[in-house]
Each structure stands twice: as structure tokens, then as C-alpha cells.
Length: 199
Image 1 (cartoon, rainbow, N blue to C red):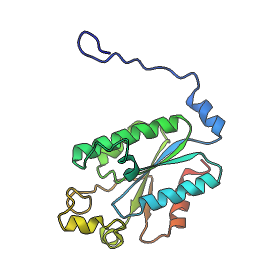
Image 2 (spheres, one colour):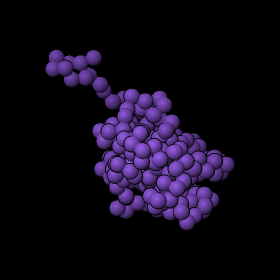
Image 3 (cartoon, one colour):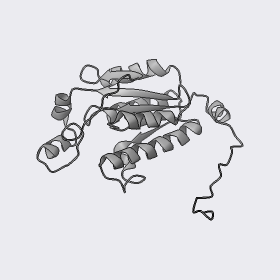
């Protein structure tokens, strides 16, 4: 539905139940834990282990994984810079809705560009967005190469691959930095839990 000038007639509908009430019903502090890093750095591994740890502690938690969202929500997007930005925008909007519902959301997404990560942060209230830099030297990521993608990129069979022919902009200042080449998974998730507190 549009007006005479072609502008959409969309009106924001206010909630009858507040974000604070939903969080109180779940007994937790909702937030978005945004895990960024090179392919092979360990984002998904850390995200899934953290999800399990928080779930076992009685928290209501959900993971938005970069690969999974490209099977549905973002399956129409490629890997150009514009598509990567739109991928992040959509995931951030979904994460914002889940945080509004009272959940702890873990996003595991390469999200290579600082401006896109800052756009994601801007959607959240102060303290709700925690940027977690899952750091590992690119050589270590290439050695791990869990999906064989670095090898394919070096062969020219994948284009615009982050860490090979597309850049990754490290966070200037992240809320948490974890070097997965020096810490095991338990050590990684303990660092995050210590940062977010009891959640």
C-alpha cells in the first residue's frame, strides 16, 4: 500500500508488552553477542559451545550462523561487497528482534567490514551489543580450512573469498578479543562469559 507519491504507508505498531517485561519473564539480560573473524578462525565452534553452556545454565539463547541464514533468509545474496552488507543488515535486524523478545542471540558471521559491524551495533541499546573478535592468524585459518574453501579460493574456484582476495578489517576496538590459536574452546567461552557476566 502506497500513497499518491508512491511512498509505502507503513506505521510502527507499539508493543503491549515491553522489552523489559519479556526479559523479566525469561529471567535474563538479553543481548547480542556478535562473533566476527576470518573463515576458519573458529566462530561457529565457539558459538555452538557457548550456546550449549548458556542453555545448560538455564538461559534462553539462539545462534544465527552465517552459513545457516544463507540457506533461507539470505539465500538470494551473493558475496559482493553490497551483498555482504545486506547480509549483515538482515541478520542484525533479526538479532535485534530476538533481543527485543528477551533472548541472548549469538551471531557467528565473518562480517568483514567495520562499517557494517558498526551499523549492526547501532540497532541495539547501550550494552546490548557485544562484539567478539574471534582472532587467529590467517596462516592458522588456512591450515585448518575446515570446509576446504581456502584451497578452492587459491585455485581461483571461489571469488571474493575473505582472507584471500577479499579483505577482512579487524575491529579497531572489540569488546572481547579471543585468539583461538592460543586458547581451547572452553577457554574461549569462559572469556566471553566473564565479559557478559551472569546474563
